[in-house]
Length: 420
Image (cartoon, rainbow, N blue to C red; front, side, top):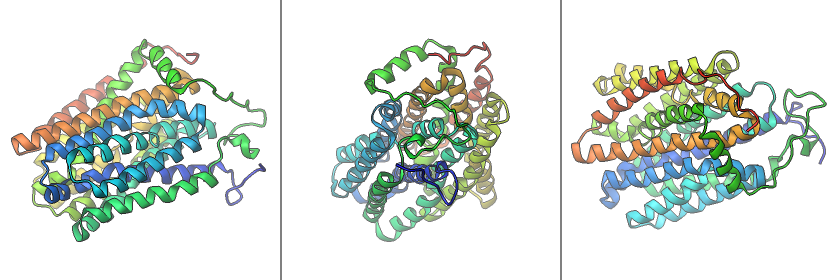
Protein backbone atom coordinates (compact mmCIF):
# COMPACT_ATOMS: atom_id res chain seq x y z
CA UNK A 1 0.00 0.00 0.00
CA UNK A 2 1.47 3.35 -1.03
CA UNK A 3 1.77 6.43 1.06
CA UNK A 4 -1.51 8.28 1.62
CA UNK A 5 -1.85 11.99 2.20
CA UNK A 6 -4.70 14.04 3.66
CA UNK A 7 -5.06 17.22 1.57
CA UNK A 8 -1.31 17.09 1.11
CA UNK A 9 -0.64 16.61 4.81
CA UNK A 10 0.30 13.73 7.10
CA UNK A 11 -2.37 11.02 7.11
CA UNK A 12 -2.39 11.11 10.92
CA UNK A 13 -4.67 14.12 10.54
CA UNK A 14 -7.20 12.00 8.61
CA UNK A 15 -6.98 9.31 11.30
CA UNK A 16 -7.63 11.99 13.91
CA UNK A 17 -10.75 13.12 12.05
CA UNK A 18 -12.04 9.54 11.69
CA UNK A 19 -11.54 8.68 15.35
CA UNK A 20 -13.05 12.00 16.43
CA UNK A 21 -16.23 11.19 14.45
CA UNK A 22 -16.44 7.66 15.86
CA UNK A 23 -15.93 8.91 19.41
CA UNK A 24 -18.57 11.60 19.15
CA UNK A 25 -21.07 9.10 17.69
CA UNK A 26 -20.42 6.69 20.56
CA UNK A 27 -20.83 9.59 22.99
CA UNK A 28 -24.17 10.38 21.38
CA UNK A 29 -25.30 6.79 21.87
CA UNK A 30 -24.28 6.75 25.52
CA UNK A 31 -26.09 10.05 26.18
CA UNK A 32 -29.34 8.90 24.53
CA UNK A 33 -30.80 7.22 27.66
CA UNK A 34 -30.61 10.61 29.37
CA UNK A 35 -32.71 12.12 26.56
CA UNK A 36 -35.20 9.24 26.61
CA UNK A 37 -35.57 8.76 30.36
CA UNK A 38 -38.76 10.82 30.58
CA UNK A 39 -40.25 9.56 27.25
CA UNK A 40 -39.67 5.93 28.29
CA UNK A 41 -41.18 6.68 31.68
CA UNK A 42 -44.28 8.09 29.99
CA UNK A 43 -44.55 5.46 27.23
CA UNK A 44 -44.07 2.32 29.32
CA UNK A 45 -44.85 3.43 32.87
CA UNK A 46 -41.38 2.35 33.98
CA UNK A 47 -39.92 3.93 37.13
CA UNK A 48 -37.00 6.33 37.01
CA UNK A 49 -34.92 3.87 39.06
CA UNK A 50 -35.51 0.94 36.64
CA UNK A 51 -34.52 3.06 33.64
CA UNK A 52 -31.51 4.30 35.59
CA UNK A 53 -30.49 0.69 36.24
CA UNK A 54 -30.36 0.00 32.49
CA UNK A 55 -28.36 3.19 31.91
CA UNK A 56 -26.03 2.29 34.79
CA UNK A 57 -25.50 -1.21 33.34
CA UNK A 58 -24.46 0.30 30.03
CA UNK A 59 -22.14 2.79 31.69
CA UNK A 60 -20.56 0.07 33.84
CA UNK A 61 -19.91 -2.27 30.91
CA UNK A 62 -18.74 0.72 28.86
CA UNK A 63 -15.92 1.06 31.37
CA UNK A 64 -15.15 -2.58 32.16
CA UNK A 65 -14.78 -3.35 28.45
CA UNK A 66 -12.03 -0.74 28.07
CA UNK A 67 -8.90 -2.67 29.10
CA UNK A 68 -9.97 -5.75 27.12
CA UNK A 69 -10.69 -3.53 24.11
CA UNK A 70 -7.21 -2.00 24.38
CA UNK A 71 -5.65 -5.47 24.46
CA UNK A 72 -7.89 -6.62 21.56
CA UNK A 73 -6.72 -3.65 19.50
CA UNK A 74 -3.13 -4.75 20.03
CA UNK A 75 -3.91 -8.37 19.13
CA UNK A 76 -6.60 -8.16 16.41
CA UNK A 77 -6.24 -4.58 15.20
CA UNK A 78 -7.96 -1.27 15.77
CA UNK A 79 -10.07 -1.42 12.61
CA UNK A 80 -11.57 -4.89 13.23
CA UNK A 81 -12.28 -4.06 16.87
CA UNK A 82 -14.03 -0.81 15.92
CA UNK A 83 -16.14 -2.41 13.18
CA UNK A 84 -17.30 -5.15 15.54
CA UNK A 85 -18.18 -2.55 18.19
CA UNK A 86 -20.10 -0.33 15.76
CA UNK A 87 -22.10 -3.32 14.54
CA UNK A 88 -22.99 -4.27 18.11
CA UNK A 89 -24.15 -0.73 18.88
CA UNK A 90 -26.21 -0.40 15.71
CA UNK A 91 -27.93 -3.79 16.02
CA UNK A 92 -28.67 -3.52 19.75
CA UNK A 93 -30.07 -0.02 19.36
CA UNK A 94 -32.29 -1.10 16.47
CA UNK A 95 -33.49 -4.12 18.46
CA UNK A 96 -34.70 -1.84 21.26
CA UNK A 97 -37.42 -0.55 18.91
CA UNK A 98 -39.30 -3.76 19.70
CA UNK A 99 -38.86 -3.81 23.48
CA UNK A 100 -41.83 -4.02 25.82
CA UNK A 101 -40.22 -4.90 29.17
CA UNK A 102 -37.43 -3.42 31.26
CA UNK A 103 -35.17 -6.48 30.95
CA UNK A 104 -35.07 -5.86 27.20
CA UNK A 105 -33.99 -2.28 27.89
CA UNK A 106 -31.19 -3.63 30.09
CA UNK A 107 -30.03 -6.08 27.39
CA UNK A 108 -30.09 -3.62 24.47
CA UNK A 109 -29.09 -0.29 26.02
CA UNK A 110 -27.19 -1.83 28.92
CA UNK A 111 -25.45 -5.09 28.03
CA UNK A 112 -24.80 -5.09 24.27
CA UNK A 113 -24.44 -1.36 23.58
CA UNK A 114 -22.38 -1.00 26.77
CA UNK A 115 -19.81 -3.54 25.56
CA UNK A 116 -19.82 -2.11 22.04
CA UNK A 117 -19.39 1.51 23.10
CA UNK A 118 -16.70 0.44 25.58
CA UNK A 119 -14.47 -0.31 22.59
CA UNK A 120 -14.85 3.24 21.24
CA UNK A 121 -13.82 5.40 24.14
CA UNK A 122 -10.70 6.77 25.84
CA UNK A 123 -8.73 3.53 25.42
CA UNK A 124 -9.15 3.88 21.65
CA UNK A 125 -7.93 7.46 21.93
CA UNK A 126 -4.86 6.44 23.94
CA UNK A 127 -4.03 3.63 21.50
CA UNK A 128 -4.34 5.90 18.45
CA UNK A 129 -2.30 8.68 20.05
CA UNK A 130 0.55 6.33 21.01
CA UNK A 131 0.52 4.63 17.61
CA UNK A 132 0.16 7.64 15.29
CA UNK A 133 1.83 10.51 17.18
CA UNK A 134 5.21 11.20 18.74
CA UNK A 135 4.68 14.94 19.28
CA UNK A 136 1.50 16.83 20.27
CA UNK A 137 0.08 13.79 22.05
CA UNK A 138 -1.57 15.85 24.78
CA UNK A 139 -3.25 18.15 22.28
CA UNK A 140 -4.64 15.27 20.21
CA UNK A 141 -5.77 13.42 23.34
CA UNK A 142 -7.56 16.58 24.43
CA UNK A 143 -9.28 16.81 21.05
CA UNK A 144 -10.39 13.18 21.31
CA UNK A 145 -11.64 13.69 24.85
CA UNK A 146 -13.55 16.76 23.67
CA UNK A 147 -15.34 14.60 21.10
CA UNK A 148 -17.52 13.34 23.94
CA UNK A 149 -18.80 16.84 24.57
CA UNK A 150 -19.09 17.45 20.84
CA UNK A 151 -21.24 14.32 20.61
CA UNK A 152 -23.44 15.87 23.25
CA UNK A 153 -23.38 19.20 21.42
CA UNK A 154 -24.55 17.60 18.18
CA UNK A 155 -26.80 14.79 19.33
CA UNK A 156 -28.66 15.83 22.47
CA UNK A 157 -30.48 18.97 21.23
CA UNK A 158 -31.45 17.24 17.98
CA UNK A 159 -32.52 14.03 19.69
CA UNK A 160 -34.39 15.96 22.39
CA UNK A 161 -36.37 17.90 19.79
CA UNK A 162 -37.03 14.70 17.84
CA UNK A 163 -38.22 12.91 20.97
CA UNK A 164 -40.52 15.78 21.92
CA UNK A 165 -42.01 16.04 18.42
CA UNK A 166 -42.14 12.42 17.25
CA UNK A 167 -41.59 10.18 20.29
CA UNK A 168 -38.73 7.93 21.32
CA UNK A 169 -38.69 5.52 18.35
CA UNK A 170 -37.27 7.98 15.76
CA UNK A 171 -34.50 8.84 18.22
CA UNK A 172 -33.49 5.19 18.52
CA UNK A 173 -33.66 4.67 14.74
CA UNK A 174 -31.45 7.72 14.12
CA UNK A 175 -28.76 6.48 16.50
CA UNK A 176 -28.81 2.99 14.94
CA UNK A 177 -28.42 4.41 11.41
CA UNK A 178 -25.51 6.68 12.38
CA UNK A 179 -23.62 3.73 13.90
CA UNK A 180 -24.21 1.61 10.80
CA UNK A 181 -23.00 4.34 8.43
CA UNK A 182 -19.67 4.58 10.24
CA UNK A 183 -18.77 0.93 9.54
CA UNK A 184 -17.78 1.30 5.83
CA UNK A 185 -15.99 4.58 6.57
CA UNK A 186 -13.75 2.90 9.14
CA UNK A 187 -13.22 -0.14 6.89
CA UNK A 188 -12.03 1.80 3.86
CA UNK A 189 -10.20 4.78 5.37
CA UNK A 190 -8.52 3.69 8.64
CA UNK A 191 -5.07 2.09 8.20
CA UNK A 192 -3.95 -0.15 11.02
CA UNK A 193 -0.42 1.33 11.41
CA UNK A 194 1.39 4.32 9.89
CA UNK A 195 3.87 1.86 8.38
CA UNK A 196 1.03 0.21 6.43
CA UNK A 197 0.89 3.33 4.22
CA UNK A 198 4.65 3.93 4.23
CA UNK A 199 4.37 6.66 6.89
CA UNK A 200 6.08 7.34 10.19
CA UNK A 201 4.07 8.53 13.21
CA UNK A 202 3.46 12.27 13.23
CA UNK A 203 6.59 14.01 14.54
CA UNK A 204 8.82 10.91 14.25
CA UNK A 205 12.15 10.80 12.49
CA UNK A 206 13.01 8.51 9.58
CA UNK A 207 14.64 5.96 11.91
CA UNK A 208 11.67 5.66 14.27
CA UNK A 209 11.51 1.99 15.36
CA UNK A 210 8.61 -0.14 14.18
CA UNK A 211 6.77 -1.46 17.24
CA UNK A 212 6.31 -5.23 17.49
CA UNK A 213 2.88 -6.62 16.66
CA UNK A 214 1.23 -8.30 19.64
CA UNK A 215 0.33 -12.00 19.33
CA UNK A 216 -0.71 -12.68 22.93
CA UNK A 217 -4.20 -13.43 24.22
CA UNK A 218 -5.91 -10.06 24.86
CA UNK A 219 -7.66 -11.28 28.02
CA UNK A 220 -4.38 -12.51 29.46
CA UNK A 221 -2.67 -9.26 28.42
CA UNK A 222 -5.35 -7.14 30.12
CA UNK A 223 -5.21 -9.07 33.41
CA UNK A 224 -1.42 -9.25 33.34
CA UNK A 225 -1.22 -5.46 33.09
CA UNK A 226 -3.76 -5.10 35.90
CA UNK A 227 -1.80 -7.50 38.12
CA UNK A 228 1.32 -5.36 37.73
CA UNK A 229 -0.51 -2.04 38.00
CA UNK A 230 -2.34 -2.73 41.25
CA UNK A 231 0.96 -3.07 43.06
CA UNK A 232 1.68 0.61 42.53
CA UNK A 233 0.24 3.43 44.59
CA UNK A 234 -0.18 5.82 41.66
CA UNK A 235 -2.47 3.37 39.88
CA UNK A 236 -4.87 3.47 42.82
CA UNK A 237 -4.74 7.26 43.05
CA UNK A 238 -5.46 7.58 39.34
CA UNK A 239 -8.26 5.03 39.53
CA UNK A 240 -9.78 6.67 42.61
CA UNK A 241 -9.79 10.19 41.19
CA UNK A 242 -11.10 8.93 37.85
CA UNK A 243 -13.91 7.13 39.72
CA UNK A 244 -14.96 10.55 40.98
CA UNK A 245 -14.63 11.94 37.45
CA UNK A 246 -17.18 9.42 36.18
CA UNK A 247 -19.40 9.93 39.20
CA UNK A 248 -19.58 13.67 38.56
CA UNK A 249 -19.93 13.66 34.73
CA UNK A 250 -21.75 11.14 32.54
CA UNK A 251 -23.11 9.23 35.53
CA UNK A 252 -24.82 12.23 37.10
CA UNK A 253 -25.01 15.09 34.59
CA UNK A 254 -25.12 12.97 31.44
CA UNK A 255 -27.83 10.66 32.75
CA UNK A 256 -29.95 12.86 35.03
CA UNK A 257 -29.46 16.50 34.05
CA UNK A 258 -32.40 16.62 31.62
CA UNK A 259 -34.66 14.85 34.12
CA UNK A 260 -33.43 17.21 36.88
CA UNK A 261 -34.30 20.20 34.70
CA UNK A 262 -37.72 18.71 33.94
CA UNK A 263 -38.33 18.42 37.70
CA UNK A 264 -37.72 22.16 37.89
CA UNK A 265 -40.13 23.07 35.10
CA UNK A 266 -37.78 23.21 32.12
CA UNK A 267 -38.82 21.78 28.75
CA UNK A 268 -36.82 18.85 27.39
CA UNK A 269 -35.53 20.90 24.44
CA UNK A 270 -34.38 23.71 26.77
CA UNK A 271 -32.58 21.19 29.00
CA UNK A 272 -30.97 19.63 25.93
CA UNK A 273 -29.82 23.09 24.89
CA UNK A 274 -28.24 23.58 28.30
CA UNK A 275 -26.24 20.36 27.86
CA UNK A 276 -25.24 21.52 24.39
CA UNK A 277 -23.87 24.75 25.85
CA UNK A 278 -21.86 22.69 28.33
CA UNK A 279 -20.68 20.56 25.43
CA UNK A 280 -19.49 23.59 23.51
CA UNK A 281 -17.48 24.93 26.43
CA UNK A 282 -16.06 21.48 27.13
CA UNK A 283 -14.90 21.27 23.52
CA UNK A 284 -12.87 24.40 24.24
CA UNK A 285 -11.82 23.38 27.76
CA UNK A 286 -10.79 19.81 27.03
CA UNK A 287 -8.87 20.67 23.86
CA UNK A 288 -7.15 23.43 25.86
CA UNK A 289 -6.45 20.90 28.60
CA UNK A 290 -4.56 18.76 26.10
CA UNK A 291 -2.46 21.78 25.10
CA UNK A 292 -1.76 22.56 28.77
CA UNK A 293 -0.87 18.93 29.50
CA UNK A 294 1.98 19.13 26.98
CA UNK A 295 3.39 22.08 28.96
CA UNK A 296 2.50 21.89 32.67
CA UNK A 297 2.41 19.45 35.58
CA UNK A 298 -0.69 17.28 34.95
CA UNK A 299 -1.21 16.72 38.70
CA UNK A 300 -1.75 20.43 39.29
CA UNK A 301 -4.11 20.58 36.32
CA UNK A 302 -6.18 17.77 37.87
CA UNK A 303 -6.31 19.67 41.17
CA UNK A 304 -7.83 22.72 39.48
CA UNK A 305 -10.22 20.69 37.30
CA UNK A 306 -11.68 18.59 40.11
CA UNK A 307 -11.90 21.53 42.49
CA UNK A 308 -13.72 23.73 39.99
CA UNK A 309 -16.10 20.92 39.06
CA UNK A 310 -16.92 20.20 42.70
CA UNK A 311 -17.77 23.80 43.47
CA UNK A 312 -19.98 24.09 40.39
CA UNK A 313 -21.95 20.95 41.33
CA UNK A 314 -22.52 22.20 44.87
CA UNK A 315 -23.73 25.50 43.40
CA UNK A 316 -26.19 23.98 40.88
CA UNK A 317 -29.09 22.97 43.20
CA UNK A 318 -29.08 26.49 44.63
CA UNK A 319 -29.04 28.25 41.24
CA UNK A 320 -32.89 28.47 41.28
CA UNK A 321 -32.77 27.37 37.64
CA UNK A 322 -32.74 30.99 36.55
CA UNK A 323 -31.23 31.98 33.22
CA UNK A 324 -28.17 33.55 34.82
CA UNK A 325 -27.66 30.78 37.37
CA UNK A 326 -27.83 28.01 34.80
CA UNK A 327 -25.69 29.93 32.33
CA UNK A 328 -22.99 30.38 34.96
CA UNK A 329 -23.09 26.67 35.79
CA UNK A 330 -23.01 25.68 32.10
CA UNK A 331 -19.88 27.73 31.45
CA UNK A 332 -17.95 26.76 34.60
CA UNK A 333 -18.89 23.09 34.56
CA UNK A 334 -18.61 22.82 30.80
CA UNK A 335 -15.03 24.08 30.67
CA UNK A 336 -13.78 21.09 32.64
CA UNK A 337 -16.46 18.44 32.00
CA UNK A 338 -13.85 15.90 30.90
CA UNK A 339 -10.75 18.08 30.89
CA UNK A 340 -9.33 15.51 33.33
CA UNK A 341 -8.74 12.98 30.54
CA UNK A 342 -5.54 14.38 28.89
CA UNK A 343 -3.59 14.80 32.17
CA UNK A 344 -4.75 11.37 33.41
CA UNK A 345 -3.63 9.70 30.17
CA UNK A 346 -0.31 11.58 30.30
CA UNK A 347 0.39 10.43 33.87
CA UNK A 348 -0.54 6.82 33.04
CA UNK A 349 1.69 6.76 29.95
CA UNK A 350 4.65 8.42 31.67
CA UNK A 351 4.32 6.17 34.70
CA UNK A 352 3.63 2.80 33.08
CA UNK A 353 5.14 3.22 29.62
CA UNK A 354 3.67 3.40 26.09
CA UNK A 355 2.94 -0.35 25.91
CA UNK A 356 1.26 -0.94 29.27
CA UNK A 357 0.00 2.62 29.68
CA UNK A 358 -3.03 2.37 27.35
CA UNK A 359 -4.11 -0.95 28.87
CA UNK A 360 -3.75 0.30 32.43
CA UNK A 361 -5.55 3.46 31.42
CA UNK A 362 -8.31 1.11 30.27
CA UNK A 363 -8.54 -0.21 33.84
CA UNK A 364 -8.44 3.34 35.18
CA UNK A 365 -11.26 4.17 32.77
CA UNK A 366 -13.15 1.16 34.11
CA UNK A 367 -12.99 2.82 37.51
CA UNK A 368 -14.34 5.98 35.85
CA UNK A 369 -17.34 4.08 34.52
CA UNK A 370 -17.94 2.27 37.81
CA UNK A 371 -18.20 5.72 39.34
CA UNK A 372 -20.51 6.83 36.53
CA UNK A 373 -22.71 3.75 36.90
CA UNK A 374 -22.90 4.30 40.66
CA UNK A 375 -24.05 7.90 40.17
CA UNK A 376 -26.53 6.98 37.43
CA UNK A 377 -28.20 4.37 39.63
CA UNK A 378 -27.93 6.04 43.03
CA UNK A 379 -29.22 9.38 41.74
CA UNK A 380 -32.20 7.55 40.24
CA UNK A 381 -32.83 5.85 43.59
CA UNK A 382 -32.58 9.21 45.37
CA UNK A 383 -35.07 10.79 42.99
CA UNK A 384 -37.50 7.85 43.21
CA UNK A 385 -37.57 7.58 47.00
CA UNK A 386 -36.87 11.14 48.15
CA UNK A 387 -38.40 13.07 45.26
CA UNK A 388 -35.29 15.21 44.71
CA UNK A 389 -31.80 15.15 43.21
CA UNK A 390 -30.43 17.63 45.77
CA UNK A 391 -28.42 15.17 47.87
CA UNK A 392 -26.93 13.48 44.81
CA UNK A 393 -25.55 16.72 43.35
CA UNK A 394 -24.16 18.08 46.62
CA UNK A 395 -22.45 14.79 47.54
CA UNK A 396 -20.95 14.57 44.05
CA UNK A 397 -19.55 18.09 44.46
CA UNK A 398 -17.93 17.21 47.79
CA UNK A 399 -16.39 14.07 46.26
CA UNK A 400 -14.85 16.16 43.46
CA UNK A 401 -13.23 18.53 45.97
CA UNK A 402 -11.71 15.53 47.80
CA UNK A 403 -10.41 14.19 44.45
CA UNK A 404 -8.76 17.55 43.78
CA UNK A 405 -6.51 17.18 46.82
CA UNK A 406 -5.90 13.48 46.13
CA UNK A 407 -4.57 14.41 42.68
CA UNK A 408 -1.67 16.29 44.24
CA UNK A 409 -0.50 13.05 45.91
CA UNK A 410 -0.03 11.28 42.56
CA UNK A 411 3.66 10.78 41.93
CA UNK A 412 4.65 12.19 45.31
CA UNK A 413 6.72 9.06 45.76
CA UNK A 414 8.39 9.65 42.43
CA UNK A 415 9.13 6.48 40.57
CA UNK A 416 8.80 5.26 37.00
CA UNK A 417 7.47 1.90 35.93
CA UNK A 418 8.08 2.27 32.20
CA UNK A 419 9.35 -1.30 31.87
CA UNK A 420 6.29 -3.11 33.22
